[in-house]
Length: 348
Ligand SMILES: Cc1cc2nc3c(=O)[nH]c(=O)nc-3n(C[C@H](O)[C@H](O)[C@H](O)COP(=O)(O)OP(=O)(O)OC[C@H]3O[C@@H](n4cnc5c(N)ncnc54)[C@H](O)[C@@H]3O)c2cc1C
Image 1 (cartoon, rainbow, N blue to C red):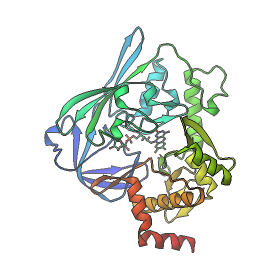
Image 2 (cartoon, rainbow, N blue to C red):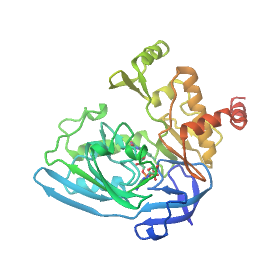
Image 3 (cartoon, rainbow, N blue to C red):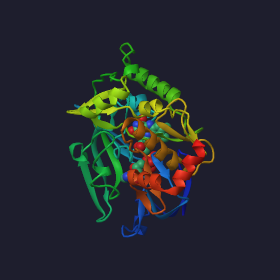
Image 4 (cartoon, rainbow, N blue to C red):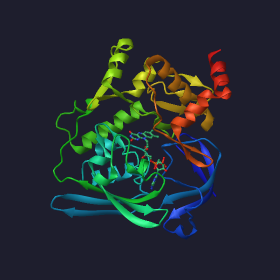
């Protein structure tokens, strides 16, 4: 048994606990299992998880210096922010835009963590791990990881089949500050330390500290829409915030849409939309996973009704049987009488 606590301040008990590699003889890929880092991107919907909770215990931190850069091999169990800080202290730069992102190194490639103009894909050299159905060790280079916006092969073809045990990063010896993101472009010839400090400062001002207020960071993905859909949206929201993404597509700011829908600071039972950052759903005190899901369904519904844009969760939904499809879960919840009653009570 293992009690899981997460950044949303939700708790759940897993039936069994496998630390990889020391307990691997106890693992069975025929029984349900859940790959777990530190739970900062998970909505736990039930109080129990009826399966094997699997975590890598690798804390290797190995630096190989070559003429063309530093190759840094990192164990999956290391805390991401501590790695950013440790490398900065060693004079190895590049990751400072990704400071203060909660979670483990092993989870970072899954959704290709990103912030302030950078993403893991910019530095990832290889991802190593174990294909659990055959227990074979495998390595994927950057291209094979199929990184995209909050996406990778590990969320698709290899979803739940591949335990990441090691991530190797390649960091340049010729430091070029990345100041693409608005607030960083104001810095004059910044050092990596300046960027690190500024990113930590902005994040602490904008995002609630999960140690104090339960949250899972951005709850929804920034939606990608066609330019035709954007033109429709601009008729109701002329100042809509968007970023060019790909040919024929733009990325909208989900937080802006939630705010424009009038939901910033909105509360439903013990769950709320954060009053400074509408993209973050919070546990006000004693919310259950279902309370948070009901609020997420309501936010999705209001934004869809007002702007005809469907927000999809970035957070992974976990029930007693393992991960479920978050979009489908919200769809079914919205159709239930339980949810309709709850919304009715809130709006009364
Ligand atoms: C306050 C806050 C701010 C955040 N800001 C950002 C941000 O700016 N950018 C961003 O991208 N994310 C952000 N996040 C989301 C979160 O930090 C990332 O998703 C992080 O990578 C999750 O790490 P974790 O170890 O907690 O993973 P978990 O939540 O434990 O797991 C996440 C997913 O990865 C899988 N997984 C975990 N470890 C492994 C492994 N070793 N092998 C295979 N699969 C595994 C799990 O099955 C699950 O599907 C934020 C979260 C919070 C709470």
